[in-house]
Image (cartoon, rainbow, N blue to C red; front, side):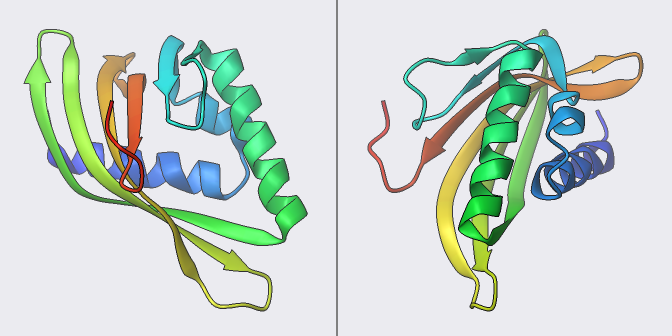
Length: 135
């Protein structure tokens, strides 16, 4: 496990999302990945569902006239028998066209990363929001 590889993975991963490349961003998940967030009634399972959610988010930001930047910080990582367990703080900055940036959300992102063909991929992601109770 190389911490630089993990940092570079997250930089590329979030730049794809923030840049509107929903399909490419979804490609950084395994085909059978699980994505769970408080805004979802059920976890999304599979790359196709993750891509659909990303496309909807990109469209929503465009309709709102906002640019979002996901800032991944304070990442810890440890190897497990099932891959790499990574825990990060994530702040989402939202900037409306012609306006000032604001912190949109503050979250904790818990990922299980795996290597496939030498590349890191997200196999599982669980998001908790700082403004909502855990559970």
